[in-house]
Every structure is written in C-alpha cells, then in structure tokens.
Length: 406
Ligand code: CTP
Image 1 (tube, rainbow, N blue to C red):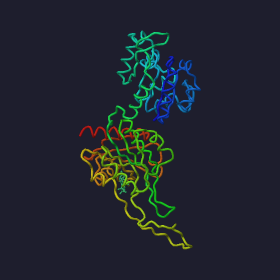
Image 2 (cartoon, rainbow, N blue to C red):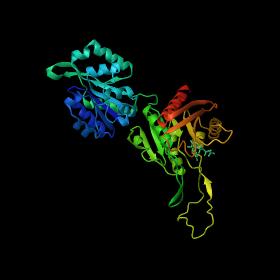
Image 3 (cartoon, protein in one colour):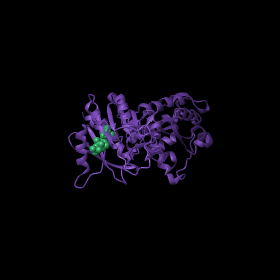
C-alpha cells in the first residue's frame, strides 16, 4: 500500500522512525513528508534511508510530477506522527503552505493523526476545537496518552507508542472502515492466451488495467479480494501486489480461469468478471511447432469455443451473491452501446454489466475509459468517464449501492 507518514516538529519525531521502519517491514511503499521543523529533530538522510524513498518538504520540488498533490492522490493512508498543536491547527484551517498541508488537502484516503504536545497545549480550547473539526471531517486520533513529557513534566500529551500507532494503521490498511469491510470479492482481469503450439497462442490486447483498478477500489472500500489475473501489461499489477487485502492468482488460459473461478467465486459476495476471455481456442493444440514445411497453402485452424465462465457463474449464483460482467463492444451502424450491453447482460444472466466501446485506438490499452452499466431491469444505472481508477470507483460504488438496496 502507498502510505504517507507526515512528521511534524516535536521531539517525538525520533519515535516516528520506528513507525516508518515497521511499515516498510510490512512491505508498504512509505513516503515520509516531514515539516521543516521536523527536520530539526530528525534529518532527511534518516528518513530516506529508513523509508527507501526520496524525501522533500517543499511544494516547489518535483513540480513536473505535481508532487504537492500526487502524494495525497496516490496515498492509501496518511498518518501524521507526531502531530503538533500547530500542525493540527493548520490542518483544521486547511492551510497548505507546505507539502504536508497540500498532501492532506489532496488526499481522499483515511487520515490518522498521533498528537504530541504538552498537557496544557492539548487541553487548550483552541486545540480541542481543532480536534473536533478534524474528527468531524473523518480524521482519526491515535492518543495522545499520559506519561512523561519533555522537560520532566507529566500528563496527557505524550505521543502514543510507535507500536500502537502501527497497530491502528495496520488494522485500517487491512480491514478499513469502508462500505465493503467484511465482504469477499472475486475479480478477474487481463486477457487469456490460448496455445496453438508450444510457441504460439491466440490472445487479445487487454492490459488488465480496468479489472485491476476494480480490485484496488474494492480493497480500498475494505473488501478482501481474490484477483484472478491473466496476461496484463507491464506494471499493471504493482499496486495490487502491495495491497494486503488483495490475493493475486495468476491464470493463463480460459480453462485456468474457469478452474480458479470455480474455486474462489462460490464463496464471494461479489463476482466481477473483467477478464478478456478468449471465446475460441485451438480444437487441438499441436505438440510440435506448426511449420510451413515449404508449402504456400493457407493454414486452416480449427477452433473450439471456450466455456462461458461468466454465464456459468451467473447460473450457479449463490444466494445474495452479485455477479457483474464486462463487455468490450464495437457497435455496428444503427446499434448503440447500451443496446448491446442490455442484450449481453440478458444472455449471460449477470446482475450488472459494464460495457465500454473499443476500437483500434480506444478502450483496451489506454489509461482512460467510458463505462456504461446496465442492470437486470435493462436500466442504465451508471455512466462514468475518466481515468480507469475513477471508472472503477464509480462501478464499485454502484455495486455496493445495488447490494445495499437488496
Ligand atoms: N466471458 C467469460 N467467458 C468467456 C467469454 C467471456 O466469462 N468464454 C466474460 C467476460 O469476462 C466478460 C463477459 O463474459 O465479463 C463478456 O465478454 P465478451 O467477450 O464480450 O462476451 P462474449 O460472450 O464473447 O460475447 P460476443 O458474442 O460479443 O463475443
């Protein structure tokens, strides 16, 4: 998971080093965003060495990558430890004069903060009002706890121990508090390869990106996801591999996918078949490489249909289970995408079907998509356009709403 650790200027900053270390040990991609004041306590080399990522504090660094919002947008979770009274006031007011401020405003991920300050500062009505504002906006507090404070004072205001903060962060990353918490999802993504001989196959141009984004979006909502991943473009699985709520099972052929779906789909609350499954495979796979042998005659291949996995899963749907199909369509003249989606949903027996238009230059390999979702009453219940992450989120929200309305 992509975790941002904000560190602000208090002596407890040295303890945040252990928090970062624990998160890195869990396999997360950890990005530390210290304030300038925090760097007086622990310097950049320490954060970079421990997090294994570059560290900057300024909104003017790495401008080409729009770093001031990119970190927040990419984050699966933001934790600020320690959070000083000053930083909490800035967060409550929405001030964005440093990288932590812009990251906080740009993120839609859960935000957890571990305050650390003297008892009087914590108890001050100004700080307490900021706590109220932040918690009313969904920010969650970890601590502070009672104990020894800097300068020999005692009382409430001490930062929670790094192990405790790690425990809360870990629970949030694993289970979330999202709408799909406790649900099991089975998602397929990518294309299948159907072998012709030991060196050749029939395949398609699916990048797997849309299906993987559905798995990631469901996991962000707290679902436990089994992702059956066929052949996908380079790097498409990276984020899913880091997500503790996603278990990836690799498949190659339609038969593989049918077997894996048979194993995992029956126990799922939601099944999303986004894989581009080949409709045909070689009727007989040649054990030897097919050769021309000097002949100039055309090659005739006999193809047999593959099993329709989605139709099979829909026919054997478990009580309460929601089965969602995908369709990549090239509507002909006089036909609309919606008409084709309605016809295909009926044929497959799915509860919902998400359709998008594809062509030589659209749909499969790009980062953007235009999805139309139809339901069992032939209604268009969702239309989403934009980055595949956004269209996936719209689809997942729709699936959750349809489930909740049942
Ligand atoms: N699908 C499947 N098994 C197959 C083929 C497709 O489970 N053998 C699923 C896909 O994962 C997708 C949906 O069915 O969710 C629609 O795929 P598509 O290839 O568009 O459907 P076809 O049945 O092949 O329809 P067409 O006649 O348009 O080729």
